[in-house]
Amino acid sequence: MSKKKYTFYTAEEKLEYLKLILEGEYSQQEIARQNNMSVGMLSTWMKKYREGGLQALENKRKPGNPLSKYQRRKKLTPMEELEYENMKLRIENERLKKGYSKEEVVRIKNKK
Image (cartoon, rainbow, N blue to C red; front, side, top):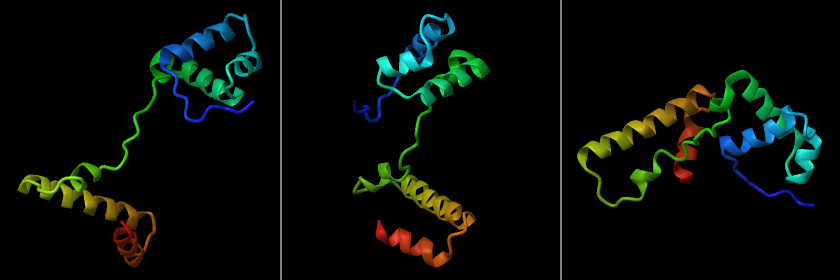
């Protein structure tokens, strides 16, 4: 039995599974087995739900690459050019804070 990769559940779907467990109809193991998911994931959902309710079950949006919207365009306005340069400098600054040397940051930038 192979697990689905990158299955996303809405907060409402997560809550449905948790209610079945909380009401004692099924155990975490039974829900996990029936729906091809891990017990650990259900435990994480349960912990989040107990600490923050339905809102805690909402999926967090992942930021992706902030530079991509500028890199795809051929012509940028002067304001967009400044925003793009600002973002590049912020990213470089974060990498330097994490311990990359200036040479490593330049090498990483040149790979792209």
